[in-house]
Length: 143
Image (cartoon, rainbow, N blue to C red; front, side):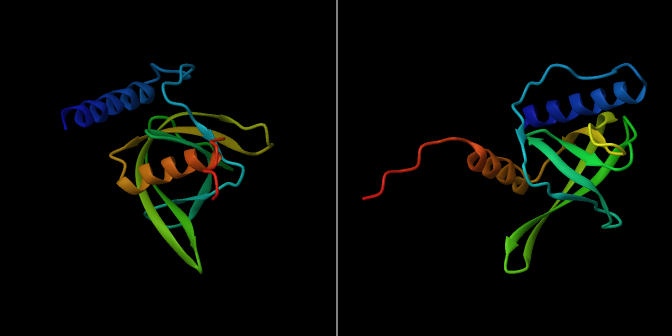
């Protein structure tokens, strides 16, 4: 997996540059993002306390909406709790670096963009499921 290793190393360099103030704001988006009309809670995976809501997702990143600003360049341990029905949930733990943070349109809220490290397969499945759910693909014809 040299490609995955190279991408991971590039993200670490990117976070290091963000930490040292070399990057101000990202304006180019390599991967299409998918807006979520219902916000999923995001938790600190160490303390299991809520820190915000999932704003949008991509294969390599996510946007967090929170009531506190996030430290740019810092590494975060995040947890998503995906409801599965009947009181069950799937837990997805992620390690992420905050690349940017700014005030949201909602007063006293902040948007923060994160690059993800070594995402588990469950996160990729979540992104794919959200793409399918929010796309306008024709339904199969019924017999």
